[in-house]
Image (cartoon, rainbow, N blue to C red; front, side):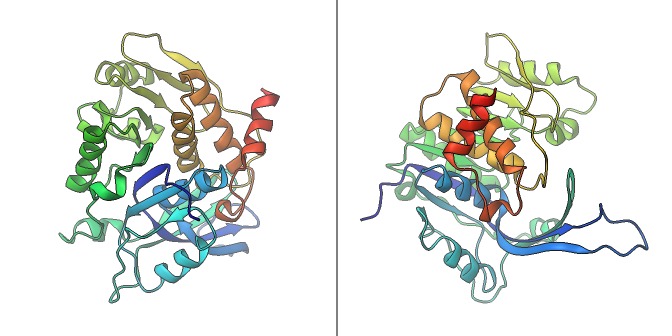
Length: 301
């Protein structure tokens, strides 16, 4: 008997070709040896779904159209997992959306055709439906898909379902109605160029009643809410094997914490611990964090 779906996820679901190099990152005109390579589910939503399933949360996800190369891999990967792919659309005349990531420890470089796809004028993602979201307890919404992203957020608000998002600027509906918005250092640097992290946080906090978290890679995280103080927390210290999926795992940790009604300090600690486990192994989809591993990191403090 299938479990009741707890979390709805909408956003990027890809086939990711990942290459872990043996002896440091690529250098011009020099040979690089590939240590490991895989073709596995990726994208902000795909990775979060894998992590949430590993943490014991049942998921329904939708977003990017699937194609003839990505769909079989995705279906086989999630066949025995609590991840419902039924809302997703398959395009028989297309290979599907894929990216290629070269990794060496703390350094990675993603490649793909996303600029071409977004400039094509065509929609290559689904339209979220009320019936797929209704009944779920929490949601996570990626910010990439324009009107469809907004629609997913509006449905959640109408149904009273709290959602987690990422990299949503302060003036957007997505940020202003989110239960949690996780903003990356890269987003803050591009959207709020020249502003100090504290100033960015003040602006974000003033424009939402939810929790805003600013992550800064290996640096100190900032988090807080409107009318409250600005908090700081250092990431957990682990040996890094690959940073691929670290932010997506942090988002998944926030979804888990929101589902379990954790207070803000515990949300950030739990999500950070999830991310710490994730960066200590490769490939993440085959070795997602388990709840006992996250709890062990938390116990170490």
